[in-house]
Length: 282
Image (cartoon, rainbow, N blue to C red; front, top):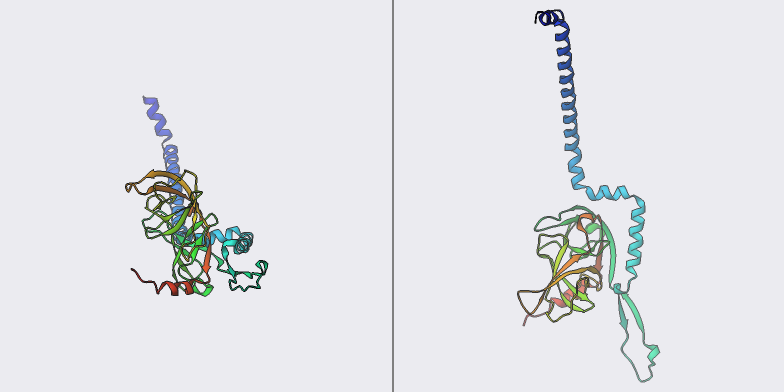
């Protein structure tokens, strides 16, 4: 024991120096870590809101001009699809008219443009998207909105430079649809909860609907052209109302991955709307 006490007496200053050195290193490390933490928080405070509000734009610029060229090419192809046109036939015939002399011509009914999503929600009861084009770019209310995979929603509000889109993931969304090959028409609605699934209503119980059948727009509205892909049948059950089936549809549009959308304009919509305004409820 005496030897141990003598050792501590002789090595006292060395032990104190070692302890102080260790404490200094620990305190310096904590100080550096704290400064790094403060710097990280400061950067996050600046960059975070920009990333949140401009996620779509960041995605756009990251993909570069090659992506823009591909979008333009897709628009050119979509503009030439058959459902973009009306076929007009001159039906005024005379006894001298020949069958091969009937004048048929195509009139463009729909046209396309595109925009980038700069804000969106997918996990709320009422979901929305905002795109980076508005009235200055020719965007109007009630234009159809498509993702590269299929139907995405409808333009509901427009400012000078931006537009609000109501996606399928909204309780007020209603899309006239047809399920094939049964060719039964119904209404696509979203009942909440799952951003991947919607419901197809008003399909008669006697209809032969199978899992995997395709669902398209039926063209009964003046917003969506006929034949746009919506999704595939996920499940089929007899609903509470025994007259109709309960059909769940896997949506083609993956909203979490949507950054570029196509906007579809019905060039004859004002004329059609003016006729509908004269309808009377009987």
